[in-house]
Image (cartoon, rainbow, N blue to C red; front, side, top):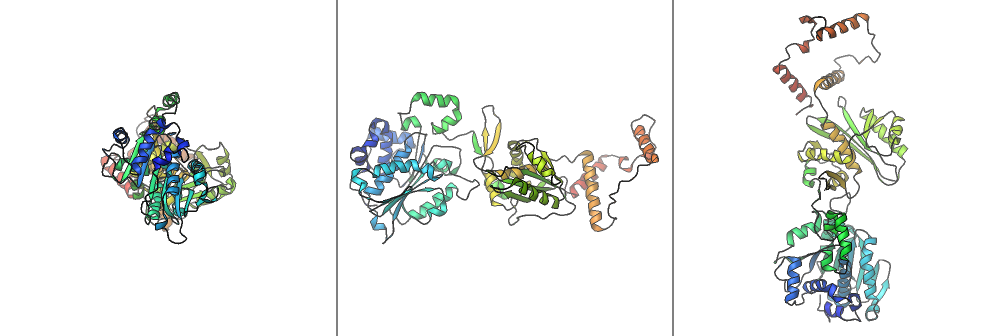
Length: 546
């Protein structure tokens, strides 16, 4: 950009320009150092010490910084400073040499949504309304201001697609830590920043400022801090300071109460420390390693035993979801996923889910304890037994983690499911207990975790294993046509059969003497280690154990 006729500090010091916003100058002293550093103004010795304290660097780069990341506690004054920089760049810098005929340069303010961006925009409109600058305003709308010098100022909800159509002379992202990272969204923070940089590429001197109070140790704010804080040679500046350091006017008594009430939260919100009690639940790499590329759904197959889990919803706010899975060896295989997005009719969706369950041979579904009895009653009207899960979703997620990290689950190629699993957060309470939840929606992830963890944690020991072997062998024989179809009519129990059964039970219990050799069922004879080895081999061949 061309050299402005005045510096930003001239504008701040002049009561006819922006001075009225900074009457108590002592409380803004640290911010004034930041402004000087970013816009390449000289520092005296006390100011250099302030720079070193909040950046971890020895000295600023002589030419200033075109990109800076502010990790600042809440109520620290960052919104007003972002508005000041935007107003200064819009009104006192000449961008016309870099704009072609009819092209407008944009100063873009991005936040979680338009409502969140309006705090900066309100400051901006106030600064543009001073007598010296008011004549520059050509058009003023609720979310945009056009100036006569070819510059527009707009607020925008976080959407990387919308950013692509602009020529950006300055970009400002507010509360970066609270934009989505790998959430159930098409607009993660990395994509938004990645879309803004090319929109600034043709404008020499275009500036990108990112500001936020910190949250979990992930996302672009954390990556900037991890890579650039304390690095003298880095051209991206990271400035990290607490609320009280950047805005001493915030009452100490208020901050003390906040720290006493919830120390972990206060350390992040007011102390500008990234939280250590909130971590990403699982890495995206681990999740994607479990995804079978191109597999959208597996149709039902005869002879396979399926399980299902549903996450109910009343139809107005959250999705209602269903997951169906089966087991192969020590792996859980996800077969189908369904999601009904709100608004919807719970009755209609229940009927659709029940129909799908029956195609997989299922007459039972598990789900959480949502909304009392209505899921049970609705599913029962369609011939499906609804069992409430004994485990909360947090426990299901904890059981899912080793399956993901150990690649013991095969997931469908379902981007929304992947994003929801990656969005899960692990939070450690004061008691030391971990809980898992998400910043946004996780309805699909909940249903899938319930289905696959229930499968892989099934107990195949004892009689259940023998029954499962018999069931699978019978199903295979019927499929091959080697035995006649099953007779569904109940078979009569004769007196002779009942008498023999009672007698055998007494003999086995030692009540009437030992049974004769020919009376002992074959699978009880020679029950040795070699027999157990043979049964283990059969279990493995049927995919019941690894």
